[in-house]
Image (cartoon, rainbow, N blue to C red):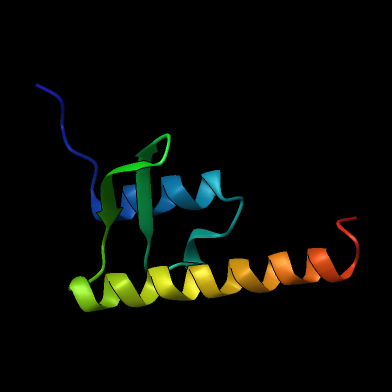
Length: 75
């Protein structure tokens, strides 16, 4: 029987993958997908509203990044 990772271990693993210090992270939402299908979410958010808020903020930040790419001619 395998032991489950603690929430701290999950946070540290995700921070390592994102190349960020674990101390700088207090929450996460990971979208698991196959093609355009969302298969599941991995999160430590307290509730659904927080999860949706975090996803909305991520979409907002990506939209700004795309806008900057378009403004610079895609370079």
